[in-house]
Length: 339
Image (tube, rainbow, N blue to C red; front, side, top):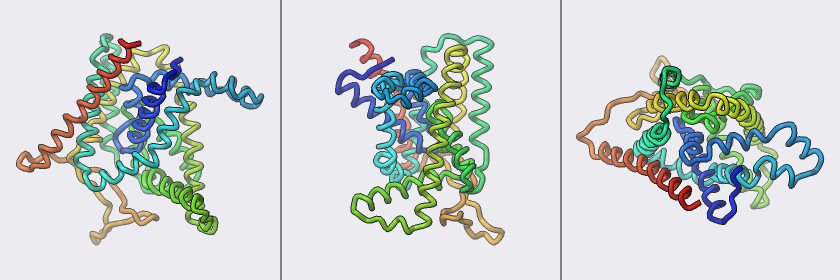
């Protein structure tokens, strides 16, 4: 197990957690890609596997230090802390740029995914009939997901719990965007925007000594939804990690081929040139969900216009995204050579 020994190690693990948290919040982008490309994916999965029956026995026995070491606490705590901080800082900034510079944000992520495909596949030398078929299956699955239509919002607590289990796949499966799945399930705005903002506002009010939210039934209901979603996410994270740990151990090459295919297929989800398709009534009026947000049906993709300056700016941001991944590759190689 990897244990961060220096301040530099801890800082970069925290930054990687920030990146994972930001990526998980963007529809079409997977936090698992960040973990895979940054070189800590398998460490992340195997560390989560340590949250098992033995870990609970150590917890119930009050052996907290032994528990911390057993679950690879120094590693996991920094990654998860970075992800939590991201949800209230980096992702807020990301929300702003998605509203004001949406094309350039999508272009950057599109370039990062292209870079991640190169990063994962460049050293993969195990192509054969089995892995090629696995790659094709992953490719078709990735393409198919990009053409699914979202459902309507559903705040049933059992469904919210299932959303948590399913959406956390973005952290454990590179290329599968948990946020995009939440859009398909109809609960992206409720669980990633409204719930997180409600928690942020609640903490802000508590720090100011304002406890009026206790009388706000809508706020309390949103916080309850967030708690159930979090419980579902924790359940999914641990259970999926055990499944993936087994798969990576016994079918590593086939799994890598599926990931390469799936990430390639998911490029359609983050294609920068697209516009949101909003549900309208028979009279042509925009339809809204229970929170007053327009109901998103899907994204309509189109080819860029080379006559527009923003098209060339977007192309530069795609290159920028690719360079970020190449920079991570260079950083990883230099860290290994210095070790």
